[in-house]
Length: 231
Image 1 (cartoon, rainbow, N blue to C red):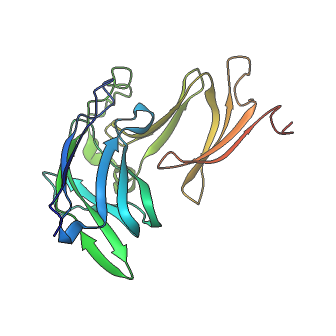
Image 2 (cartoon, rainbow, N blue to C red):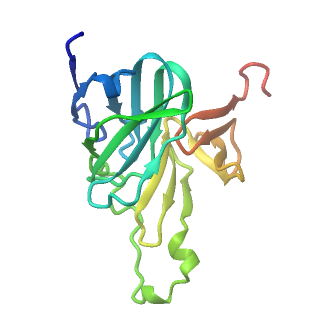
């Protein structure tokens, strides 16, 4: 029998948005499909974590995760389908919080769970802290629907940012773009964000770029005036 092989992946702390994670993966009989897991923060976004999972053979992969102090509330990524190299995004994260997770591999409808690993998210960058203070002396009067939902806000100036904010004024999701601003943004029925982008040369709702992204930050549509015959 081949000896178990330990892999330790350390992620450097390049900014407050990056995670510092020490991870040990044991390739034993239960986790034979997984050879390596690496976590990072895509786009320096502390509320998202990308899990890059390498496998020894083509399998489906998803990640289940939860706050260490709330193990009954479990989130799951969409499955990445039948390949060796997988990349999935963990969302609905809180800043400065400890999380636990496990990787699920699926082969021929048979699921195998890794052991439980952990990570900690970084604090929000200074430019996002207390960005939306809320003064509400009587929060008990808020409708339940308002408490359960989010408000979408966006910044037209450069760098442009879209935020989802809860009733306490806490940022629960954000996406930032450089050298342009979000002039108009719409949350679609496909749970994507469709927006018009433009720099300071464009006023109010005018712009020169159409951008549609998913909640995981994936680009679905990106059309810019003057590129590839887009006028």
